[in-house]
Length: 175
Image (cartoon, rainbow, N blue to C red; front, side, top):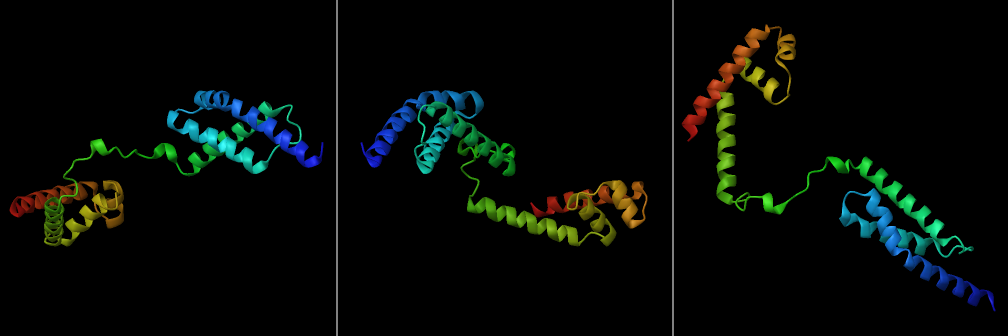
């Protein structure tokens, strides 16, 4: 038997062994991955790596070799998910979306409300506006604002109340 035909026979035996491993590989991933949708993709990744690496010279331990690749695929998946903060993503569920989310009238009304709020902000006294923006836009706490502007916390709180009352009064005018 020539070297080429021997390699082809070895590749054929290995391909049959790998094909028989589909079920055990799926079970392996099923025990380790929460999302059942990913299981088939992980199995395919194992077979892709097997195809790229080629047939090993010793096919006696094919299942061990295949599960070693599966462990590597799983480790790479966890690494990718950690780097991409995948567990922190919010799933987009179209059924939770309102059909009128992108209604032109709603968008126009939102822009009008934003313009009215900006106009109301501009009519506030400068210190009140500054305090409001530091709190609501920059997210600073009352203590930090008081320290930055050299005011008491009580004064900062009073300016915040005035700013909110001012915006509420102008919101009533905008309707």
